Image (tube, rainbow, N blue to C red; front, side, top):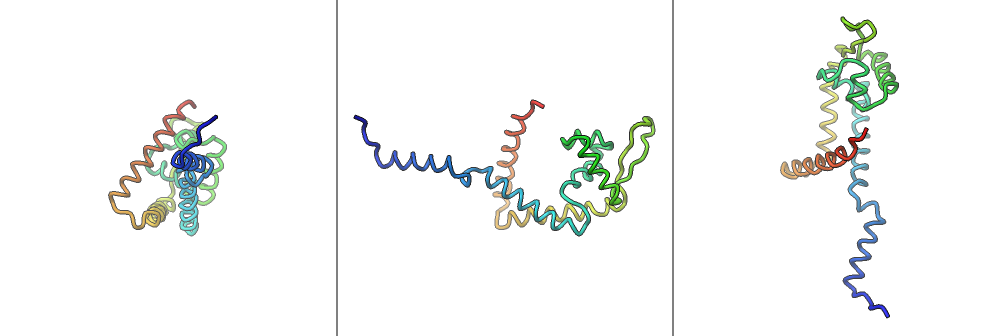
Length: 165
């Protein structure tokens, strides 16, 4: 004959069970929703500037000198070459980048920002900062720093576990 569980044990078991089944109890549920909402806000703010969230990392990498060729951009941003080629074609069509021959390697083209891109980037940064400010409205500076530390730790935990490729 089994002993009946006490009420506290049953409540703890039920609580753990519901937590396992309810995705709203997982940080990833809210992280995904926050990311989606920030992306929506950013896209709405960037649309009048003629850029989107997908092109900002490319433009920023070119501006900071982290990359200057299609291959370097693809590696840096962890995307496939065909996807990067499409992104660069759109940016070139929109007058935000230009391709110039590499001085030492005939088969390589360097990618440079146009004056239009240089003008858009500061305004784009402002749009992204506005989204962050909206998300963190009501947070103290200490809370902001604590949240940032937690999010960085989550990212580090996941990035460290995905170093196999």
